[in-house]
Image 1: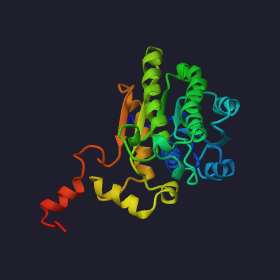
Image 2 (image 1 turned 180 degrees about the vertical axis):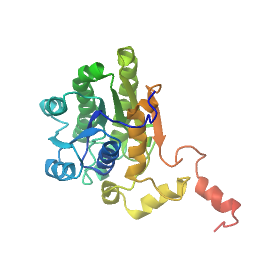
Image 3 (image 1 turned 90 degrees about the vertical axis):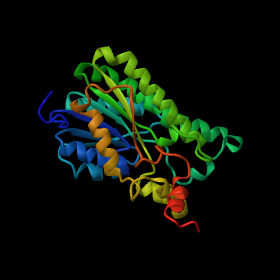
Length: 270
């Protein structure tokens, strides 16, 4: 193993959702560690603006509902860089206007369910499928960004959480089927992360509930998730595949209602 195994010198990466908070933080960190990156996003103008801030980066238009667009993303990155070493699937359907509609199953609209599955799950599968022949050549790897909601039940986001849980199984399937060909596949499960999309979709009272259950003194930031993704994508993680790394500040690691217990044992029982 190289001396500084978290470095990504000579590596190339596609980051879907590269114009978003976690996606751009990941692109920036991978660039700092020596990689060349393609920021793929449906918000192409924003992706172009951000790519200009990173040496050697390019922007690629991506529509995860369009199979041709996904395949063209991979082809364009390979044509530009000459190889592909890392695919990070971070893009997901997080439209604040749709968030209130993704509630419990009894009240779930079929069209909304189908669209979330098409973008999050089907789009991720197609991206992996298109990338795998190139990753096999470079002994590269995939890091899928999922969610801690893929591992827990909730009152809301039944479609979103189900799509992310399915991506965990997709991650394991790829790790099993392509591991002997030199391709690793892992997932990172963020908790509630302080991105612009979060502040649009979740009002302060809901954020405060999650923050109270977090074992850190604040919610995670995009840079925290980027560190987990970049680690799994690096040679330092060469013995890790088929795994889910939870980066949620310990939110899912403890007994229910820990904030109430904290208040009780501190003497504040109001």
